[in-house]
Image (cartoon, rainbow over all chains, first blue to last red; front, side, top):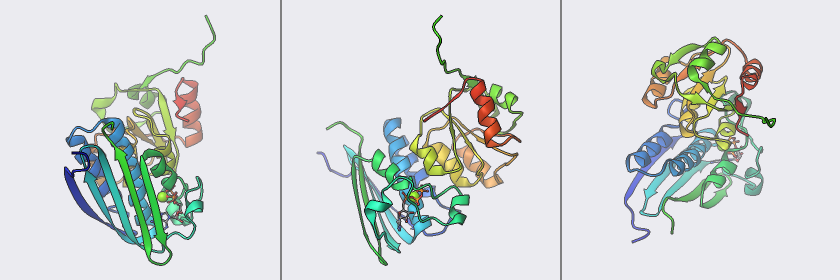
Length: 145
Length: 123
Ligand SMILES: Nc1ncnc2c1ncn2[C@@H]1O[C@H](COP(=O)(O)OP(=O)(O)OP(=O)(O)O)[C@@H](O)[C@H]1O
Ligand SMILES: [Mg+2]
């Protein structure tokens, strides 16, 4: 039955917490590897999830990441509370970033995160409300339809 | 023989020798062969061009650099200018099974030397 959930887990992401930043993505990668998902798919999910996780850490106050594994696809939904994105089209441009100098010194702010997510995902939906937060929904197929 | 811009492979052990590296982690992985290099100080730059088995070269030693190497399926991380990550980051690399080398050289020289030896950048 396509669409049936095999596995689901929710994670909390704290804005500005560079100590933990990336842990959620590491755990998701490890889950996918343990159930035998193909390594090219695991890499796509890990990259997209890490970029999404880091965007919450860098640009938002806090967020929840929901991970769902179905027999055909992996769904990652990240809902954050924060400043939101004013112009999504602009934010999607390679190289566009509002990251501070401090973030850049830590290796973030190339303006490649959202484009990386889109490139690795089969389904990509990004919505945001300024001053409220951002919602990102991605799906990555792991079985051919 | 036809002129070919042939890509050569180097083992981690050869790279370590050429760049006079300190092997911080992964003494048992020194025979891993490397053909491609990802060099950047920006994590999402590395992830944009991720190719399994590449050597990741970066000046940043935070825990996210190790996670980035793992997500990019890099074969190893090479840190520059003698930088060595803090203990808990080395532990993370150990858990993720990512070898770590550190050279005293800077990015420009390292890339020049490795290029001359036949390694190539990913993009
Ligand atoms: N969750 C978010 N909340 C608020 N703003 C965001 C969020 N995600 C992205 N943005 C905005 O979109 C811009 C582009 O995001 P993107 O992930 O592509 O690049 P970056 O995070 O700035 O740098 P990189 O991801 O390359 O380290 C950000 O600089 C920021 O202004
Ligand atoms: Mg980003």
